[in-house]
Length: 295
Image (cartoon, rainbow, N blue to C red):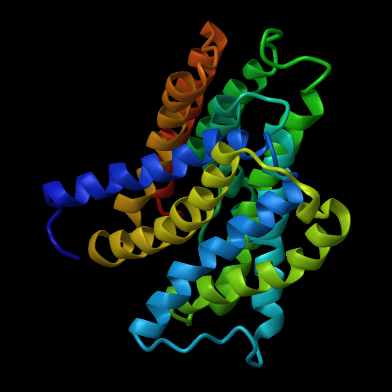
């Protein structure tokens, strides 16, 4: 691992911006497209740069190898389900709320990892972080201006989507000996295969007359927020390590709230700010707790 340079911090911020920009682009995409079509095209366009990189680096893509069932399962759990749930939920809630709700991923990961891994057990500090972080999420649901009886279920679905990201991450441990680029390309391929017939059957996108901004947002979601973002993540992991890359979790909800305000003029209430601060503090404490090794 090399010494962290200014370029590394720039790339980390860029990654956070690309991932955070996904939320307002999903919102714009929902103006014309259904959630299944959004999820499918996001995965399809996202696969293009990853497959291209594998071709350039001569990395074998094992989507249809003897481990195909793992790639298919991870593709469904880590891509298909959360992408659909998030797109469905964002139809009725502000994109900045989705950014904060999705920031709960490191918190739920701590709880789930305690039961399904050997070396990621919960401790007092992690418990404190999870409680603070989720208290921020619960407090956010008390904001009647932004979350009400009309979109409460939508907000819950986004939270459920974030949990599937965690479960999918745990499943990747089953194939942790394979190259990241290969795994990502393979799960994107399977995600596309699974979603294509479902989206075509239920939403019949050929009948749409989509707005230009929705189409551009959808293409951006696939190529940049999915494909390019994953490649950038690989680069940061390789040169700076997991701890440095994990700092992106603090930046995504902040940028998500700012971008929602600047691009879509979304309202930022006092409860949104308090919830955001609580979630970031919770993530920070959880990560501090992760450095403590139980004897």
